[in-house]
Amino acid sequence: MPWLWALAIGVTAAGAYWALVVSPTDWQQGETVRIMYVHVPMAWLAMGGYTGLAILSIMSLIWRHPLADLTARELSPVGAAATALCLATGSLWGKPMWGTWWVWDARLTSVLVLFFLWLGHAALVRAFDDTERGARAGAILALVGIVNIPIVKFSVDWWNTLHQPASVTRLDSPGMHVDMLYPLLTCALGFTLLFAVTVLARTRAAVMERRVRALETARARRLDASQ
Image (cartoon, rainbow, N blue to C red; front, side, top):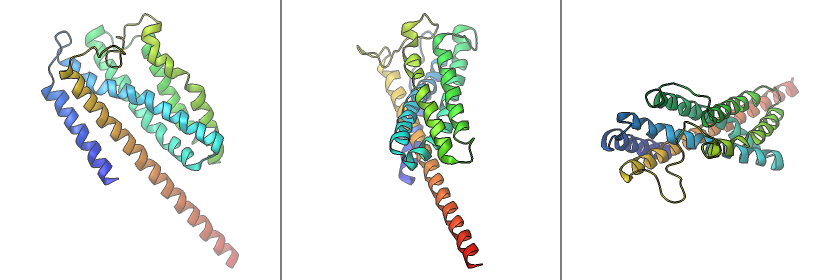
């Protein structure tokens, strides 16, 4: 964990310096383009994290793996935070570019639905006294919500939206200069490492909490038996 934290913080700091200080401004967007270095990685993490949540849900429903349940439980608050940052930074970028904080186009609306799915999963798995029952309900919700990921991804291609089409993940070639692409990818790597190590730390804490609870329960049973 210390090595992972150090790597995540180091890469994120390097990416932030590269993006905010070294990288050039855009000839149309000016300094506003620097919002991209947070907004785009958060959008990738929101979708990639939810895909990971669906995979954990499959593991939970088929193999009934308790670690999959714990990881999914601790993943959803982190995923919701990443999606909230994606929406917030998108609004900050949209005001000077579009003249409004929010528009109900396909991309923004589908990401908002994704945010509610994250929140719904986080609330549902904690809504039952029986943790296994809550995990089953959350897994079903996650698998139902996975249909929204292709909608988020391809909404700019399927519908006429204000949101710009993909410029980094295009199959032919990236639609930006390397002076902006490389710091963007570095920021994405740093945020991904931070995302992963945060989920790992939360899962580790949840495992220890469950062990402590089991030990306390066993101790209480021994005391009852001795009395």
